[in-house]
Length: 189
Image (cartoon, rainbow, N blue to C red):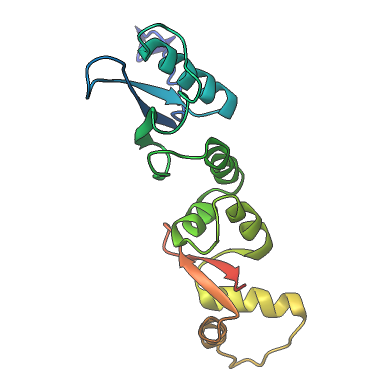
């Protein structure tokens, strides 16, 4: 390849979204307060459990796990990378359910998650699927779309913005601010 008559080696940039991961700490036998830490990529609950079990075995003095060793008292998560904080002893299935929903639904789901409008982590994806109406520029754009869907005719001076805010005030719908300055609209429960 040549640019302005000079030979140039082509190069490629490969963009890879980093895999979400957790920093797991395993307390070692022997010296109190000693621990072994390892970053684990979170893509499969069974693989994460297997890696934690291997860390527990490596940390034990005899290389075997005693009954009850693989419980939450022996390991914990110190940090999350690419994930919200699920606490020191997360349910790995719930953590993966979050990742699946975030992959499927994107920012609107992450905003819903951050709002904490559900009873448990596993309910978040169901709540999203049942209540999400979409992303809009503002409350007026949501109202215009909603009224068109239900076939309600409006006059030329109809205030769509006021209608959207009134629906939110009555508790029929709620809006979560989007990163791009718009809103994500959800039906209220």
